[in-house]
Length: 494
Image 1 (cartoon, helix red, strand yellow):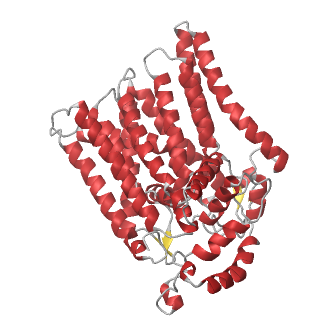
Image 2 (cartoon, one colour; image 1 turned 90 degrees about the vertical axis):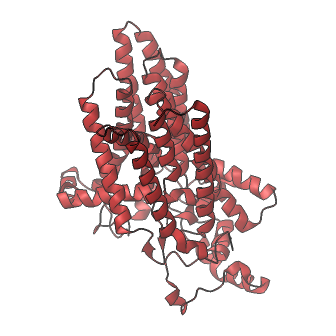
């Protein structure tokens, strides 16, 4: 296939951005409130930040969030219609004013008495979502519409993510069209359900996407400048201030910058390398230091996780007990990896008490990802060390691996007691949304693997056929698996 013009490529990417926006809007509108991925807790925090009242301890749900739960919650995530005689009751918001008031009096106090275990989560997403919520209310949106308005913030994140992936791929692959379009395509069709929910994981993919572009400029062959180091630090800090599970990314970026500094030192530019490294460290530690100070004052520990762990009933295990974990067995490792990567692709939603997934789609997701990562690593080991994209792709792989490794560490470190997830019977952190921050790195590597596979064929078009096939079957599965939610009488369309 001949090279496309730059204008054509730009229009293709604009089309992919528009497609991502439409897809995320449609599914975010189709899923009713409140889903099984702690959406009630996240909405409570958005409401509190919207009113300028961030939590200062592990707090109960606010009266406003309790009202929303009493009126707008659906039973469809957890309970089948057979529990209601074959048909769900009409939504509470359609009841008469007297009946709605009775529901509030009966159910709201129960919700207000529940503790929000997410109270200590970092503030960036909730602050932005709270401001967005206030804008919606200022526009005159009703209560339920305002909740969906917060979800629709993910439409902006989805568009930004596609564009960031495209720009990152252009830098990594030296303006080559296929890997850039492939990365944007994979991000545009990525069926991760966190984009259909009120939660910050989708935003983390965007903030670290900015960090990736800054790091690619620093790791490239051109003379590095201090400003991208500061941008990278602020973007990484924002990523960590969205979700504490993203903290390992600091170590990956720091290691990459130390690597770059040593290279500059060999060229007699140690001062430049140290200035870039120092700019990154300062721009990371100032925002994190402010948050640490807040947590130490109000929660009693730097990351505000101690009280959450105690609330959930987890207890740290002795170091010697870590190594008896089933993750160190072939079956346990396979269970962990397959569930984690499948969840990274399609999310964690359930419907009528059953996971919104099929065994064949999950098998494809984790198998294709494993093969793609393996092919990329094999080729990177075998290619010439002077290739410009080699360092960038290793950085992408290590970024994804760091988040996976952190979930392994969490899985083996704790006895989960009576907690339903993770549990003693299934002691694995397999929430793929916790890998969202590394979405751009992962799909850069996936696009590279597709190109490497196609290099074995004499037909250049095979790479486009392979990319198109992956995109089509992923979309077909996404629509067919999630189709039942569009008929819900509790969703935005109804």
